[in-house]
Image: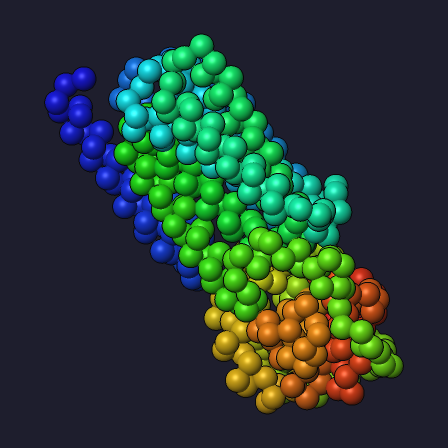
Amino acid sequence: MTSSMGIVIDIGYIAASILFILGIKMLSKPGTARQGNLVSALGMFIAIVITLLSGGMSFTWIIVGLIVGSIIGTITANTVPMTAMPEMVALFNGFGGIASLLVGWAEYNARPESPLFTLIAIFFAVLIGGVAFSGSMIAYAKLAEKMPGKPILFKGQQIFNALLLIAIVVCGIMYAISPAGPSSYYVFIAIAVLSLILGIMAVIPIGGADMPVVISLLNSYSGLAACAAGFIILNNVLIVSGALVGASGIILTNIMCKAMNRSLGNVLFSGFGSSEGGGAGPVGVQGEAHPISAEDAYYVLEAAGSVVFVPGYGMAVAQAQHAVRELGEILENNGAEVRYAIHPVAGRMPGHMNVLLAEANVPYEQLAEMDDINPIINTIDVCIVIGANDVVNPAAREIESSPIYGMPIINVDYAKTVMVLKRSLRPGFAGVDNPLFFKENTRMLFGDAKATLQGLIAEFKES
C-alpha cells in the first residue's frame, strides 16, 4: 500500500468517526433523529468503502454477503410491523455480538500464536460477543412471547452465574498462557460455549418490565464486542464506532435505570415481577371501575381545553398511533392544547413510543418528557392513557409494598379527568396491579385502542 493511499484511508476513517459522533448527537433529539440516522449511515458507508480500498481481502464473499444481507434487510424493513421493533432491535444486538465472536474465532484460527495484547482482545471479543448474542436471543424470545416474559429463577442461580464467570476467566488465563498448546483449541471453544451459557443465564432472571433496560445494555455489549474486534484486526473505525456504541448504550442504560429509580444491579439480579422477586403487586388493590362509552367520552373531550396523550405498549399492539394523531388534530381544531407525554421506559425498548409517534407524523414540538409534564399535570383537563400501565401506576407513589414503589411515573391521576383505553383491568407487562383504574377521576374506555379511538373520531365527525 502506497503512503498516499494510507493517508486517504486514515482521512476516510476520521471522517466516518466524526459522522458517527454527529449522528449519535442528532439522535438524542426527536427533531433531528431522522437526519442523525442518515448521517450515521453515511459514516458507515464511508467506513465500508475505505475498508474495501485497504485491500487484503477477497471480494467474492463480500459481494455474496452484501447481496444476501441486502435481501434480508429489504424484506425485513417491509414486512416487520412496528410492534415487532423491540424484538428486532434485540436480534440486531445479537447479530453484532456473534459477528465479533466469529472475528475472534477466525483470527485465532489464522494466528494462534498472536501477541498477548491480541490474545486478550480475542478473549474479550468472544466473551462479550457470546453474552450479547445469547442474551439477545433470550430477550427476543421474551419480547416476541416465544417464552414466558416473567423472570426464570432457581435456587443458587447467582452462585451458579458467579462460578460460570470464574470458569470463563480461568479458561481465558489458560488460553493466554498457552494459545498454541495441544489442548488450547478446546479451551478456546470452552470460552465460547461458556460465554453463550452466561448470556442466557444473565437474561432469563430479568422480567419483561425491565426489557427496555436490557435492550439498551445488550446494545452496549455488542458495541464493546465490536470494539474488541477492532483491536484484533487493527481497524481504527471499528474501534471508534464500537466504543461509541458501548459508551452510549451504558449512558442510556443508566438514564433508564434512573427513570425507574432502580440500580442496574437491581434490574439484573432482583427477578422483578416474579413471586420470588416480590410478588405481582400490592395486596388489596381493589375498587369499582367507572366505564364510559365513546359517546360520553366525546362530550368530555369536546369541552376540554387541554389534553395530554400518554402512550404505552398497548398503542403499539393495536397499531393505534395514526388514530392517536388524527384525534389529536381534531382536538386541536376544536381549540384544545394537545401534547404527548412519554415516559423514558414506556414500551419494550428505548424510544419505542417516540418511534411510533414519529411514524404517525406527530409534531416533535408536541412531545413532552415526564419531567416536563408532571409539574403542570394538575392543570390538564383530560389525560388519555393509551395502553400504558406501569408508567402511570400510582402504586409507585402510594403503596410501599408494591414492587414498583419509588419508580418515577407520569402522574396522570393528578389531572382533572383520566381516560384509560384498555381491553380489561388486567395488570401490565410487569404484572403489578394498578389502582389508577379505580380512582374517582378515572374513566375506563374498554376495548381495542385503535377501534376506541376511531369511535371517538367518528363522534367528532358526526357532530
